[in-house]
Length: 202
Picture 1 (cartoon, rainbow, N blue to C red):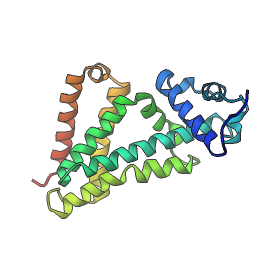
Picture 2 (cartoon, one colour):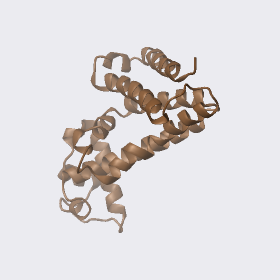
Picture 3 (cartoon, rainbow, N blue to C red):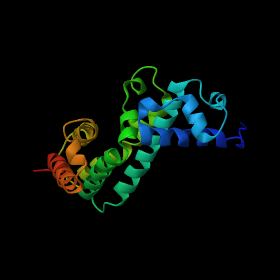
Picture 4 (cartoon, one colour):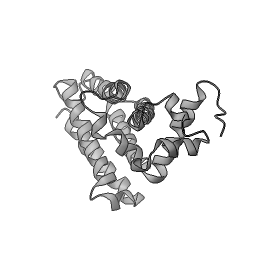
């Protein structure tokens, strides 16, 4: 089998193949051999870019967080005011989890958190994909629309609420709700509105 990729293209092809495996069969189905087979390259090819399976998973998780970051940036841009920005951010986050459940599961695996976690993943997860929410909360305080308090604390409240709901949809008792578009839309709307109510100045 010939590795018919120009320099720099192979890594991209392997990450895309890994995403396809995860989407179709789940995170636990991911293997270096399987990804190589899917990308149409030799079994040894992945080792040119990834030391082991954990390294590949980290690279794929970083790709997922970059996608989430881009969605969050677009969601905030779609809101004309801070409250609308928070609504758009919450809905977009929930949509991502429901549309890409296996990617969402990978992104929050324990080995990608804490000491020794891959630096690229930490930066994307802890900073870049979170920044639009921090900015929306800060803007809401600046216009006196949102309650007083530390911006990171208020943003954490909003994120924790929406993330918890998304997790219940993906891996919890709300899986049936996730499978029903009408119920999902109503439940998501309710959670996002209640989250926003917690941010508003009263």
